[in-house]
Length: 298
Image (tube, rainbow, N blue to C red):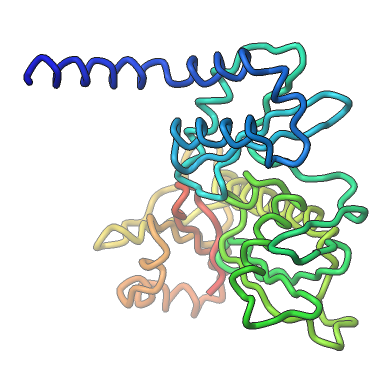
């Protein structure tokens, strides 16, 4: 029994060490059959899906055609923790003449012309609207569907994630959007902040471009214009003297904190009472969850 257990352990370890190689070897061996897949219901397509699940339970594989070349798309199924597994498998893919290997579902350029069929329902991106909500440096989205049925809410959620993949790409959905809601489209949406889903990628890019610009502006202010700095993590809020290359400005105070909570501490606010009495400009800067210093406006 001990020998059998050791043998099984060795076989398992061998599979784990060569899982990517074995997956792609099977794809190469069955390339011709895979090229014939059209609907995804074919036996070879089902076998491919099973092998993908065996490799990693959270991943999915999609066969598609782009630029006259077949693509094997490795998806994380919208599961953020599966992102490293997707990257590992794609990086291990060999060069194949008839196939292009793609990490994550990609955004579609011709979104306005596409239709998504999901659970026997059809969704046209050009007829679906969204609103964005930005708070604390995050990008949240609400999707609004015409003819929305509350009884099928779960189906709308499933379709919504695929629609977002089509609009901005799967990786962006997982890493750049925090909260997603699914709602019925109101009758009156004119001039009320509703936009067609086809515009979402533009809004997302603008948000992150502005966010980066704000971060750079704050960094520049801290590096080149700050004079009196109080460290909100220090009990005595020790004042730092101007360092080399810092421009003197007696009307500007920058409060540096290692977290947002410290900005609201009563001790810090007590220290700043005299600063406010002098009518000086106060800038609050704290370290966010990504380790970047950003400006906070109370």
